[in-house]
Length: 146
Image 1 (spheres, rainbow, N blue to C red):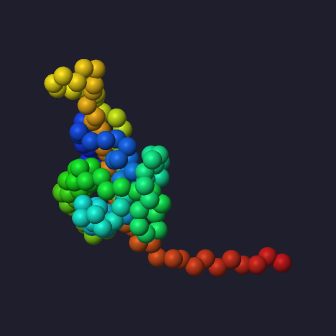
Image 2: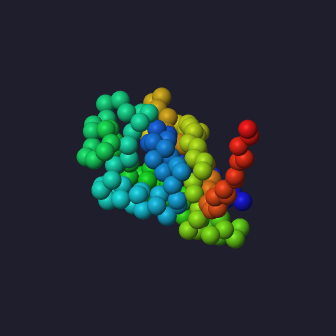
Image 3: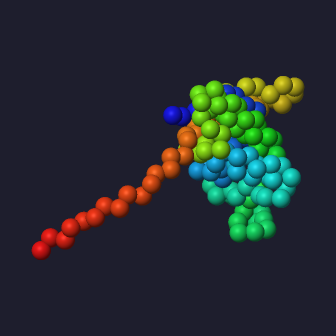
């Protein structure tokens, strides 16, 4: 089974959300929320791998990175909604792993005020999670052919 959540036209930078997605994809939801909470506290930086032009280096094992606060808050809200959707389907929160994260450009509306020709940023975000399947290793004995 799979649970998903979709955020449409969120007023966020698409580039920041893409980097957050690559940072948390493949992790358990509990660990991803904790990491994003540490990003808000500026203890852990999100590594920028794709959109890293003119981005300074940060402390630790990463090269370039930043602390995208607004995007992190929005993704935490989406993860909380994803957990609620999964619990409604009868899935266990502790075993959920993020297996799909997509961020794309949303609707570009005109800026309010006197910013002539400027449009606002918006992003569509889709996150899917699946329960971790614990498989027992089966030993298959192969007979040697002589």
